[in-house]
Length: 333
Ligand SMILES: Cc1cc2nc3c(=O)[nH]c(=O)nc-3n(C[C@H](O)[C@H](O)[C@H](O)COP(=O)(O)OP(=O)(O)OC[C@H]3O[C@@H](n4cnc5c(N)ncnc54)[C@H](O)[C@@H]3O)c2cc1C
Image (cartoon, rainbow, N blue to C red; front, side, top):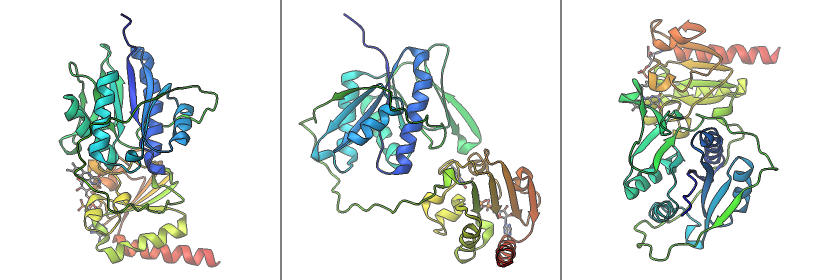
């Protein structure tokens, strides 16, 4: 009996631009890994009216796409999606399943791993293949103080969620060919215990913080929500995006999608201006790729100040105000 070719599956999370980028990044990485284990790269898509994404995922490296289209799948439901994924994974037995570590991906992957009785490494910041052909899952652990290298030697599939921005997507290639496998919706689904009452799309921002050339980032040292709001004035003057640390987001001073760090987004700006941020590893792990860092802190010994190309010992709020004033005067001249 012919044995099935091993496969690496990437879950298509296409609900908005940001999540779709993660899927494309994972397809690119899957294409790096696949030749090392003789695997094919597959995408998995659930929903309705998916043609656009089928085309996009093939153009970004999916050799095969498992597609399930059904009115029931129009709105995301964790129970339905997880049950369907379990069904497909048991039917086709992929070697590896990769999921973007978005809010959707985190809850989805955990449930699927439990259903399949396999392990899951959450929030990976690197993936590789070991000499034994296993997926090497590289992820921060112990609050980001250690980087763990994890393998799943026995259970299958090997599953990982991967932090957005970890890998680069490859350019869209219209000449690529892919096979589409249309699967039927499963019939005997358990009744959904979650009822969707309404669904609201946040308007897309023109510029994404992950792609921004200039980022101004605020920490607890900004002092208050009102004071931190000044960063938006500064950002407007500089054509920058605003990000923040976890305490600032948890305090409601910034929206959750502005969180920079292990639990948030990775950035790689040409210029990062950091205001009142201590420089904890969980934050700086996501700012390492900034070309030039200016840090403002009243404590010259703060880690962020040591990491900076220019360290300004000052009150963050006063410095921000002075910078805005200076820039406005320059613009008037
Ligand atoms: C599992 C886990 C995941 C985490 N994930 C993230 C994450 O994704 N992102 C993240 O950011 N954090 C994350 N954290 C939290 C992280 O460990 C730090 O607690 C956090 O980054 C600190 O934020 P901060 O620098 O704003 O605050 P603080 O550490 O309190 O630092 C405030 C800084 O402001 C300076 N300051 C105070 N007053 C002024 C002033 N008037 N003017 C100028 N400077 C001033 C202080 O000297 C200090 O350096 C995580 C933690 C854990 C355990």
